[in-house]
Length: 301
Image 1 (cartoon, rainbow, N blue to C red):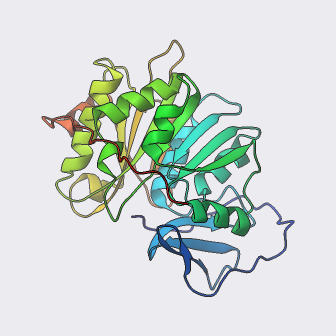
Image 2 (image 1 turned 120 degrees about the vertical axis):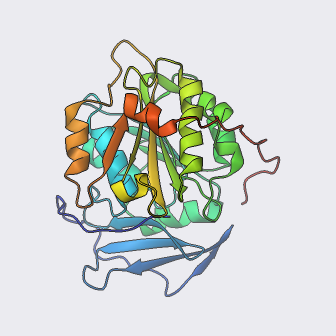
Image 3 (image 1 turned 90 degrees about the horizontal axis):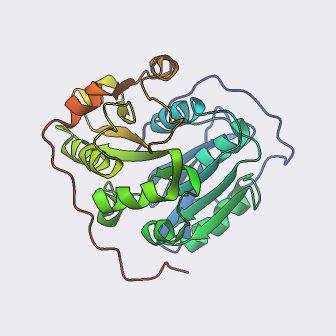
């Protein structure tokens, strides 16, 4: 779901020594998990879930983000007003982005949700994650967890959930987007990781769904955006598109702010921001997606 790259980072000395990890995959509730070290940088590790890269972390630098789409999400987070944040991570995995938020915004309060109960236990054991209440981890279905939070609770909601190479149907579309908007405080931001291939039909329809859920003024007021590498946006290859929607509020962030475009252009792998009229053109005539029914089963574990 993600390509990796190295970039300069702030280094924070590790106080925990060098942890050891199991050799090879270990069983979890939904399959297997494995941690692989970077042979050139032993503190840098990749968490694989069912053989797919799921999180990239630097054990001595919580501000490090390995995957390009997470760096793009971080660029959006960085232009939000200063201070601690309340964040909901749907699809926690190794909690790389949660570590970043706590590193950049100390005293943030975060909830990470992952379907796999055993994986939630293991990442607490393997990685130096912020402790509760700074970061609470919950084994649950992301849709059910989102439906259960109080309205106006979070500054950020992040969806990064996949079954294979697709986001489950109950976590896309207008009903999901409305549920996420309900969970956000006025001015809060929804970040979606959408993996798509040419001609980016899914990303365009997801953006249309966000436009419907966040209101007709979302795009004109700079509250709607798509972010990706230029080759992906031009339909040349498969990749990750980050979709952004901002809930209306008296002090909401306009995604057309120059600092965001500049931050994205200067990443190790530069990305393009499509906001305002550019976001409208990107969605084009795409029809909003219908959210599939929520699974009736309970979370494993």
